[in-house]
Image (cartoon, rainbow, N blue to C red; front, top):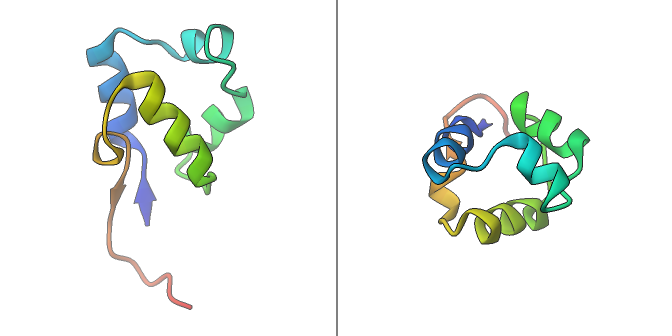
Length: 70
């Protein structure tokens, strides 16, 4: 399972709010909702967030083992 808990901490450290993401950086509110609920998002969204926050992927998301297999 991928969790985006680190995203919110990184945003706090960088002084960027969810409001900033959708008003200044055009991040869709539905994408923020998907991230908030640890749902699937496209890698393009992760790339944009890394560019906005000037951070690495590891600063946004983390993998936890679960039974989600092919």
